[in-house]
Image (cartoon, rainbow, N blue to C red; front, side, top):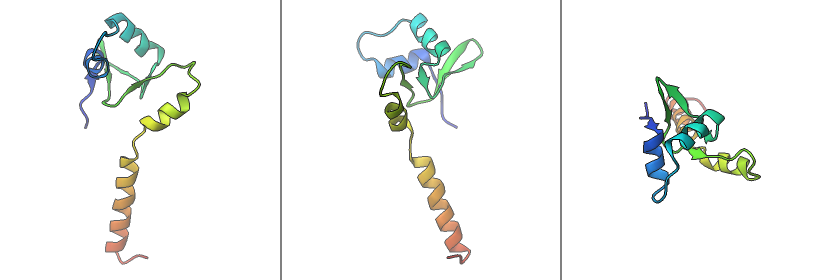
Length: 91
């Protein structure tokens, strides 16, 4: 299980200089401006590492989301299937 970040922790990683206010980060979370989406746990929002800010009006939104997706889980599942099928004597 991956450790989720608070909005402030995510902000400190992404914005080295001038940072958005806490209210702005909360508004982005409520409006769905994060991919993958922020999850509310108790009284605060949490983000998975690698989350990106998205602007719904951005014309390059699809490309940004595609680049944010990691291929590693799919690659690991494929390799596991290949190894297990080979061990069973399958073709």
